[in-house]
Amino acid sequence: MSKLISIDPGKFKCGLVLAEISEKKVHKAIILKSELLEDYVRNLNIYEDISKIIIGNGTTSNEIRSKLDFFTKEIITFEEKNTTYRAKERYFQLFPISGLKFLIPREVFILNKNLDAISALIILEDYCKIKFTLNQNLDFKTWLK
Image 1 (tube, rainbow, N blue to C red):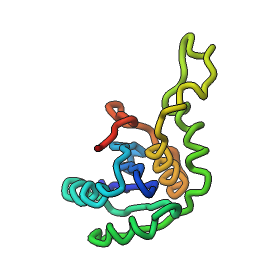
Image 2 (image 1 turned 30 degrees about the horizontal axis):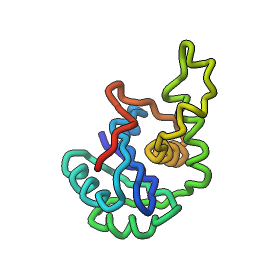
Image 3 (image 1 turned 180 degrees about the horizontal axis):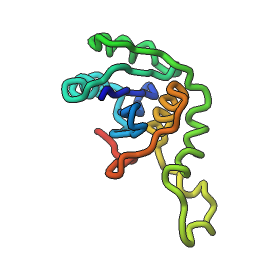
Image 4 (image 1 turned 60 degrees about the vertical axis):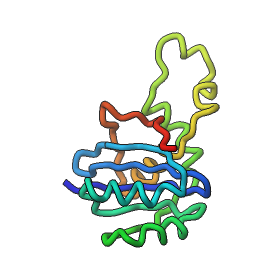
């Protein structure tokens, strides 16, 4: 089973998603410092059968792409317009509000959240034209420092 990586590139940090397309399932979703991305993808590539990397075409996408030149399979740059804005809505699809939390304005729940991994997910979903589900043990809020 081959997997795809999707990256929401940024100057200081990147969102990264590892997903299995045949299962339509996300296996990893993290946010990491941009300077750590190359090593993280190198290590991930050792243990996973990654068939393709999709990089959002925004901030620093060319720099990120050149750092990943070791990857011998296909690297695609893909449109990422409005993904950060759309990530706020997708956040609530992935993590629905329940109980008395409905009485609190939704925006309160994402004020300090970092949405880069969800933006990477949106880039992947737009590219594949399908919605992915989350692996049950997945923590979208993981930070790699």
